[in-house]
Length: 169
Ligand code: MG
Image 1: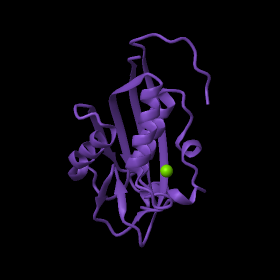
Image 2: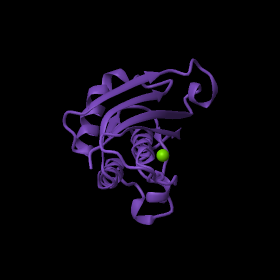
Image 3: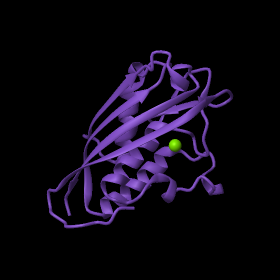
């Protein structure tokens, strides 16, 4: 965790988050808080929602609050199968306690399949709801890996997210 230095009201920061999970059979596919019909799902200790995990890390990073793995260890039995919206909500509460609010979220979901576009609005709604920020501007873009590597071979999905934070307190 990086040290916190000078505090200025109105200060703007951009936090960055990344996550990748394997795609496996026998799991529902959860992305952005939405269950997407697909033949496989993301493996993970929680529900495997790589988009919400990357967003959680972006928010924590912007507030210098560490990362999701430190806050919610994947060895914790109570987190097995956890709804990642709950982890996101708890992490954002800590970000708010630090004096920051999120002003903008930009995300890339790198997946060969399924297509992200048809689920974008539902994901945005889920994220706004989890954060308690009904008017938050959220951009979610799908990007294919053109057949390259594990993502291109449909063995994994990765997500990159930036979260713009403004200091309000
Ligand atoms: Mg994860």
